[in-house]
Image 1: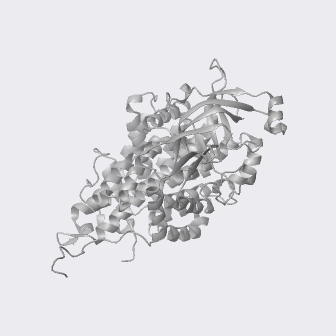
Image 2: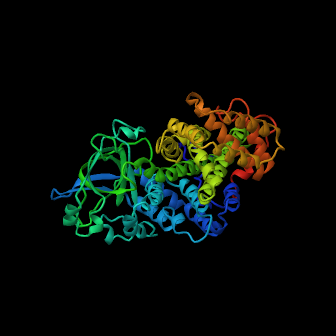
Image 3: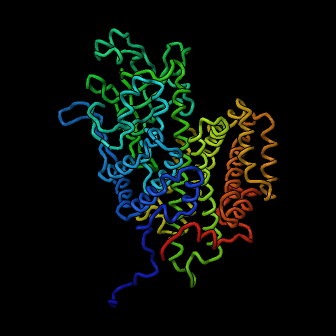
Length: 563
């Protein structure tokens, strides 16, 4: 050591990388097999290895460090409204599309593909989250588009393609297509019924004159208005809501707005600016104006909200699954660090209080994973009325509670690393910024909880579907039995208490998570979760596990590493 050197580099921890993200996660592997996704196990093993490589994880850093740029005009002054992305973004998108994360349930030949896709989405969620945005919207658009057979016939082959094609071209010239959505306006936010964007019908004769084919002339409208949040404006088309009657009596309708029209010209969609966001920086979100854009009706006129909710239920599923993936990423980085960082004479992960914190986080992460894949199975089995009812309840409840736990979880993981977690050199600061968006996007926490009340109010049988799910855990655990009995008794009463709707959603998710863990997880996991979540004080700081919890066993299961 040189006499002028001030310190040696020691007791530092190498990055969490070059590890198979699937192989190191027993809870995910078990849930995949249990919920019907066994056919995907081999492909997930290969994907986990690919996503855990240092060079793949580096793509996430680069894509977020080099944010997208909007170019409204080309060098000759023509309006183009193009978004330029860093090459790392395109590499991430290629991985997502090649693995079918945008479309696999819709052309699957075997069952369990919603579960398999959810597992893939959890793995991708541990790498980079902005690129998941257009993938989710494309995946979720398919049920809505199928309500417009002419559009579906033309577009679905490109949507279901496994080729990522970022070129700005008419759909006929593309190898693959991505779809987005636009609902939010300045004055409305979650209250989309207050939208002011208007759609005016185009006479079929004019449509035929413009676009030639009669099929492109039917259900054609011109859209005038704006969207305050218009995610991924580079997508090849968007689904938007607009009013179809000057008096407002017809209500909102859903429209398909392609970037390029059938004659090859650009549609009148003006990107005003990109949003400067807290997180999700790699992905472009924008404000747009429609200056007479052409749009085709999807679904029935005046039934735009039910039509686009076909999309919304799947995007909300991805909010749950995506939050579980970010939780898993934050946990693995924290636990990897704590096993190697020495403080006060031994590794952090062997310090009793740190073990309490990490084990508490591990319980939360595993519970989120098993809930997400169980919910995905409801979507796989949506033809079963009981599973459809269960999805109707667990989707808004899960989106509320699991997404809501994310920011607290991310802050705790960052604290494990201390100051090194707070700086941008590592991924924890980026992961922390990603957590809040899933609570905000596709309906805030309050909107989800009100939707949950609406589900029970409109469909009393939803309570029976939930009761049947909870009963599968049996009566061997007294705290669980008492907790679920009280919950179901409360649900037997009319559900009109908006004031307490958040607490109800939380109780439902905790009960389902506890039941799943009691049925399928090791006893030290299930007992630790029940004893720490089903009593008083739920929702407080991590690291408050009661005495008797086997923290060492929980942590050994949480992250399987080769030392």
